[in-house]
Length: 235
Image (tube, rainbow, N blue to C red; front, top):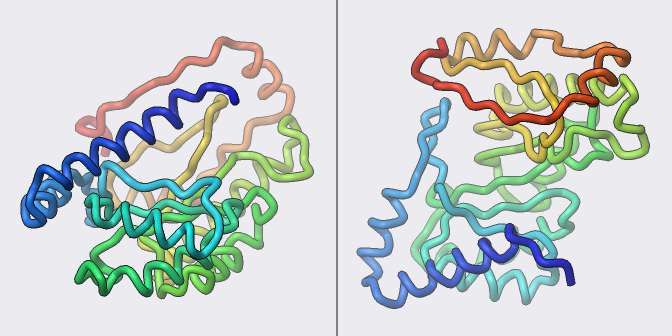
């Protein structure tokens, strides 16, 4: 099996959180969890450490691992359409939340749009995830991958469908289906609107950042560099 630092660190965090739960009282563990949050633009608090469910399948196994995760202090559960385990997670949480005196508002649920659902199908895909997870809303819904299944990465339709997906997610957020939206696995060159005020974020939804095919081919020949920006100087 190929070594993965991401997987290793994930398991390490799980071990550390379980160790913390053992050496701390329930009240101390709860206070620790409350401090490890990031405030989103919506005002929601997102836990900095979450429990990923990739490659975990089956009702019993999902229930067992989420039981351990909640006991260890995890309050963010991460899933995705392509993981194929949303139904199992919904069933498990319905049973486990009362066990730990938790309600839906005490946990942060994330899911992701499948590459097959990019475009106009994104809104319906989110509704399907809600039914699978048996909840009224998601805390965060992400575009899982910038590409579209069945379309080559260099084709312009990727940008068009990706833009439509974002429009559908923005509409879903306004309709209350998800409290926050975002993207995942955007590893290649991309243009991301930079804003932090709600007004400017809403304005960015209407912007067109499609890059012509010839320009994209040129950009893909450049060395990829990651940039950071200071939110204190962005409106």
